[in-house]
Amino acid sequence: MLLPALFRPLVDYALPPRCPICGVTVDADNRFCLSCWQKLAFLAKPWCAACGLPLAFEHPQDSCCVKCLIDPPIHDGVRAVVRYDDQSSLIAMRLKYGTRLGLAKLIAQHLQKFVVECRDNAIIVPVPLHRTRLWRRGFNQSVLIGRELARTTGIKMNYNVISRSKRTPPLRGMSGAQRSRIVGSAFALRADAQENLVGGTVLLIDDVYTSGSTSNACARLLKKAGAEQVFVFCWARVISDFEHG
Ligand SMILES: [Zn+2]
Ligand SMILES: [Zn+2]
Image (cartoon, helix red, strand yellow):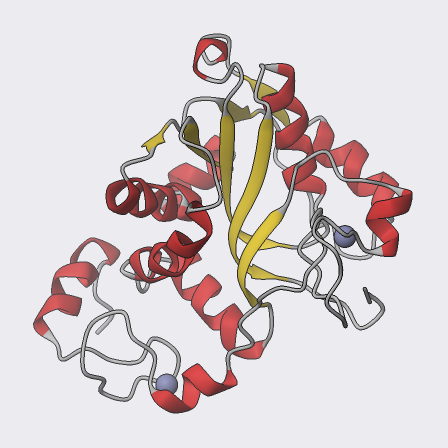
């Protein structure tokens, strides 16, 4: 029998902790088994200072990949825990579709290491969902991650900064310009948000960084509202076979 989504977190507590990818029993909550841990492609420096793309060689600080040199993103950097692949996408999907809400805690635990390089006046802002999607799903996975990160770091979260005024169609197969145009018009600044952002650093929370069009659309608005820096914090970063540093 399928359990209603409401009761699943309670049931999670009653059962022994399991690896969130393969399901084998593990020592503690929010841990991967050794085998899955070894298969996850954790991202680390050297990476592009602008988009987080892993670079093949150690470069001077703030080096960018070719793509970002030609067309720099509006945000100030991407901090992704892992590369998006068969393993890491399971985590993103299970969080997104509500079968394992505790995964937000796990992701936030991994994001904590990136917080140290951010300045004191930081604020956490999750990428919003459109209201129809929010109603259907019942929660926004980015808010869940942001809330856990706020709880463990003491950084304030404000999820009322940006609203998603339009639903975006699937962007797969579209050019960068098409994506930017569609996504750019999907978000709006909320009128009461501006005073929180002036001169500050925003940690923009998303589950997966794909083309950067969503992050850029949000960063554009956040900077318009006075934010000095916007860093994208996410679980997984898509790295296509064509990308290289
Ligand atoms: Zn496992
Ligand atoms: Zn780059």
